[in-house]
Length: 200
Image (cartoon, rainbow, N blue to C red; front, side, top):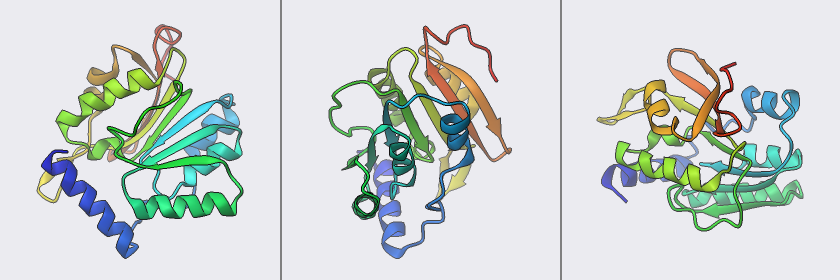
């Protein structure tokens, strides 16, 4: 674990300990709802990277997905497991680093990352992209929400669209993109089936 990654880990642990987690809204974003309920992505295996307290993992489980949620903050995972028990939902929640979450039995049909990738140091992003290639198959979707670059406690946090395309274009095609000049939503598909698709 490099120093900057470790600093972010401590930051998020502290925020969950103090309850200062404005990103944890308990509301599934409309972009994910659109994909599942309006574009009718068929249920399959899903991985939620940086799942927090499990809001979106539980949403996917309620729509028929077999879900694994990963977060490196134990307090967040504890809350997620309580919520799953209360909802009688079957979700596997792992306390682990998203770069090294342990082995998976099979590839995923959907990988979701809402606000995790953009906090990774540049040298960690190549490993993340390699993981994506290993954890998906042709036709798998990768849905990402990320900030554009900004200063955060003396380091740059965020990623540009061009940086993401350079990192993923070899194996993934960008199907959908939307930004508000501060952050963006991306929906990618593992190539071969999607290599000739047009951006929506």
